[in-house]
Amino acid sequence: MFSEISAHDVHECHGIARRCRDRGSDVDAWRHTLLSDLRELVGAQVIISSEMEHFGCTSEMKSKSLGLHRAGWISDEAEVRWQEYARSIPVERTPEYPYLSKFDGTTMMLSRNQIWGRDTWYRSQTFNEVHRVCGIDDYIISICPTPILNRCTTLWLHKGVGSKDFTTREQGIITLVHMIINQEIGTYLAAADEPKLSSLTQRRIEVLKELINGDSEKQIAFKLSLAKATVHEHVLAIYRHFEVSSRGELLAKFIGRARPEL
Image 1: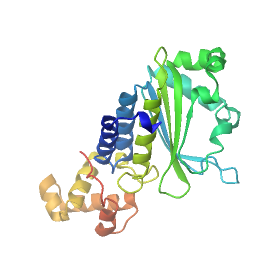
Image 2 (image 1 turned 60 degrees about the horizontal axis):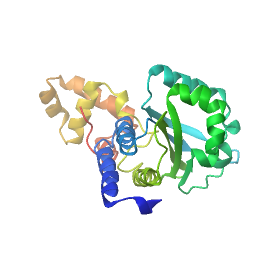
Image 3 (image 1 turned 135 degrees about the vertical axis):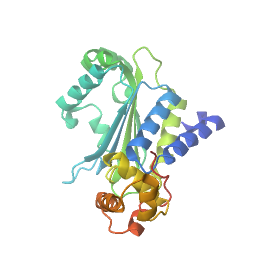
Image 4 (image 1 turned 90 degrees about the horizontal axis):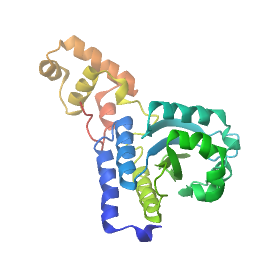
């Protein structure tokens, strides 16, 4: 798989990782960057990304989705139709389940043809009544562990109807990007269950940025033309949001990560 990847491809893969790192403190921002850039690089129509706990576990521990991001649907109606389909079928009854349930914590990639077989796929109701209607066809599933115990991320990439199937080169690119990115989740890249920057107001993001830059509350009040008491209220709200009790603990959350973008 990796034998067909060129030096230029490797450079592009690391470029995606770098751009994700530039938004690493905001899980929504870096995930959307990953989906947008990878979608363009391999010619995918739709990408669905999920961060999971206990994925493929057969014990009493159930798989749990911590965060889900989607990109590339041809219309809002297509995305809604897909969601309805996904909710209507228990995961244990999907053709992917026998394969996904064998995930053992090592990187795994599955293709549509492995799961279905090409001819069976094009005769199936799943393709003709759901995927075709939603504008998607050939797909790849990539599952990759993270440094966080019992946690992995999944990538489901779909080609558009009428597009060529994923090539071996494209499969290698997907795997390489996935492995590079996943090694940085929880360090340079925020994990899905961390407090989200997107949950803060714009003003509190401004205050947070100045706190990280080392400014005192008095300096922040002057810069933002706010009363000191107002800044103090914002600071306390930020501490509560990130579940810390001091500036030092707050700064530790951003060690090695890009500053929040305004």
